[in-house]
Length: 339
Image (cartoon, rainbow, N blue to C red; front, side, top):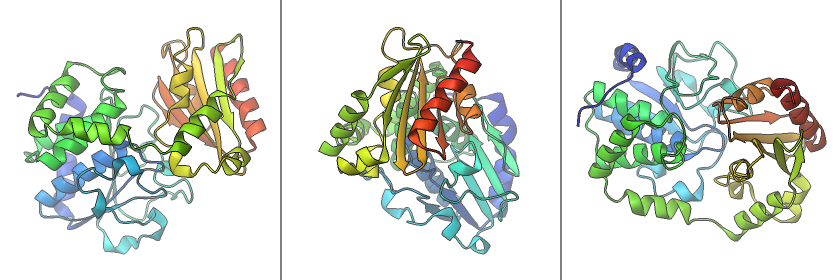
């Protein structure tokens, strides 16, 4: 199948490949609280770089890999280290994928500029801060995995079964099962090609989506029971305190993979869904979704909170109490959306 490739990716592909060819040892990472796009894209890149004869280390970063991803090909080769624990002198190149800012390399200890190692950034978030020495940010791609697919085509990488599964899972999840913009015919064609190479993608999706613990359901129930609406019901917020998580014995891993904000925006009239989870005392993870990305661009709301993302889906981390975080989110939404 011929692939119609983004002009921006065509422009940067040869430059990225030139940097890769100069490096013998390359570092990759997953972003904090990794999703399948972060994990799958990094694993696919690892396999591709190894095809080129490179020595590749993929670190998990701040967070453990979720249980639902442990069957992704290559996941057991991921090194359990954070970016701050790496001896950067061992590497000649760092490739940061699906990470729009330095705190998406590490939220626990964000690196500062200049980074200690030459860096390539490959991402699809419109709020990307272009912190690399070479940046490929293609917002026409709904997933980092789709950028990887196009790069591999241009680099003549053999897309093996293991690469295909990882890319497919990244594309499938970040497009919401091909429901989210900017999914288009190019993405569907890429997914079809990957599915031909790895027809067991159905089993991979099933295992990922059916690996929840009972605590994950308790978390969902707790979040939905906390719903409040603001600004003429244009914004719906579910909030959970750190104390609630401790009392209900809900571990960190159970928070991942459940998009409460996505459930909230499914209600007609609730134009912005926001989940506020106090993961640690004084640290609140804000997840944002919207029904109408043109009027309620949540990437702007996330940016005003120090985060980033897409117009329809974005996130931020606030270093404050849950009460103050909720007040700030409402105040910023009122200001940005003139509510």
